[in-house]
Picture (cartoon, rainbow, N blue to C red):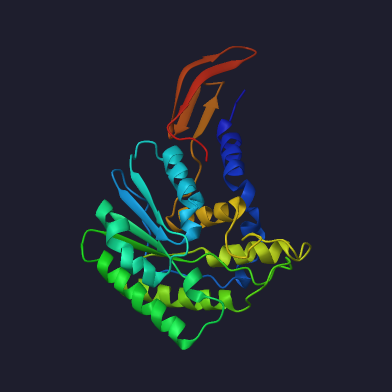
Length: 288
């Protein structure tokens, strides 16, 4: 008689982790125009102070809180501080004016920047791109003045210009954001800074769902601010970019030989009888 718990437990965890983001998995990746970063994005370490600099999408706190929760459950042995430095209406120029007072005074070990939605505006001009690039360059240079401080860039979440929701549609706004994204990837490669793509996964979710539900939006009713499901997609993209995979914990018990194996967990007080198996299971992490 063999009780193999490793497969069952792993499947339960994966179901909990990806319930809200399955559209990303089912969309054809060959049709996606992902922004690919050549620079590895290492997971945050114990003792880090991570500051997220952004606009209202960051200021709402959803994806930042979810990242914090992910680390608290997956890596409970890594105490760290995560700061939300988002401000509603922020752009690259306004963030430059407050970078010291709102962010760097916290002495972060890592600064993660997501800016571009407000910079894109309703209609792009050559000045739109020049201003964004000029001030983003200033921000990156200022943050990098401290050699040991790390930097990461995020291609901003999407502006929904495909949903049939009844609200004015500034078509082309997300095209501008994606142009920003291409420049961010180039900057990341040149500076050896990792870049995370929030834009494309949200577009994929929309493309998958809007076939049958034209008014569906993973972003939100205002085409700008993602709801809970949108932020979940964003967090999925973030932790995947950091290379965090695999089961949270797993166990394998052979009741015939009374042997046990555990990954990131402990099994104690194993008792095997004719009609039952009992034990105490203590995972070192929890499913998110």
